Image (cartoon, rainbow, N blue to C red):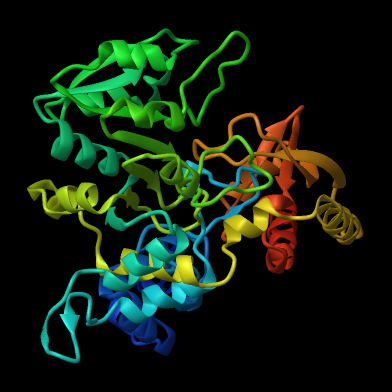
Amino acid sequence: MTEGHVDQQVSEGPRLDPRRRVPRTDTVLSDPRLREAARRLGEAPVKSAVRRAQERARHGAVPPDAVADTAVTLLPHAASGLLPVVNATGVLLHTNLGRAPLSAAARQAVREAAGPTDVELDLRTGVRARRGRTALAALRDRVPSAAAAHVVNNGAAALVLAATALAAGREILVSRGEMVEIGDGFRLPDLLVSTGARLREVGTTNRTTPDDYAAALGVDTAFILKVHPSNFRITGFTRAADVTELAPLGVPVVVDIGSGLLAPHPLLPEEPDAETQLRAGAALVTASGDKLLGGPQCGLLLGTEDTVRTLSRHPLARALRVDKLTLAALEATLTGPATPTAEALAADPARLRHRAERLARLLDADGIDVRAVDSVATVGGGGAPGVALPSAALSLPERYAAALRTGTDPVVGRLAAGRCLLDLRTVPEPDDQRLAAAVRSAARG
């Protein structure tokens, strides 16, 4: 090889190396689609997507002239790292998926409250007003037996505020059968003792009578606590005292119903509700807002005027208060149309089966191994243990579970008997085509 040939090869090498043809970052960022994304998402996530696209081009995974297109596909859906997910687990209130999905009315209310609002201002007088007054009024309207209401940031916080304000340095009477663990290792005794209150256990695991509470009453008794064991059931030789039996004992009765059911529900006859407990004589009811109520995460406190005033004026109430977005979503949940949770709970099993069969036919025509099967859904979220909700599902090979979960539009199902089940009771019908598209994408991948 002559010297001229060597020089020619050296001079052409960089031109032929595809890594040298990867466009500069500022050039890629000038793409109109990426400029718009930077306005919507911020510069950092857009630059990150560009860098990853450039790296793919350097390794030959994509051609250099496709870097901008690739960066667009790598952009996050939103500035938050939280991804929207299709809940096809058959668990209506799935804690890992954020429990209750908000209604369209609640989502709109959150969007409108995102800017400056009159959350603590009376626009007519120009003076400070009670925080969340319209949401609290809506809550009282839904529970007529509640003389007053207060809202904190979750259900556990509601119970902590009650124990701190009413029983710090005093005793709370609670049945041994109601000393529950509420999830993720948080145990009721630890939670209450942290407030400075003392717990006095009465009765036994399976049987606690009104006489057990009466015998334990003393000058240091602040209140009797009734806790709904919402994530387990004790059956057989059992006895539990109800509020009508405990209210005459002369001390306040606080009832933690947990699931946020405000009034009786025909499908959940054993699930306690706020209205019934207050009518029976409870001084205070605490509950979660993001369970059966179908609203945002918050803790509800409903009860007598004096009791709720004591709680709302305690210094801890400031640390536990909710923001304007939660108040907006809660009010829209209380006053708006049926929530997705309520619709899923009331879904017609025959209609669910029809949807499953229709989707199975469509996907089978694409050569996908799928069939419609009967299924059983649950309430979840620590509510209505043992209640089985007849449902229908798409049954796919087990390998689809991971592919659906990690797809561009994530779908979370459940595994049963070596198959991946996509339960339709937790999938709103308008999302059927979205679900089908995700399955087709998983089949191709």
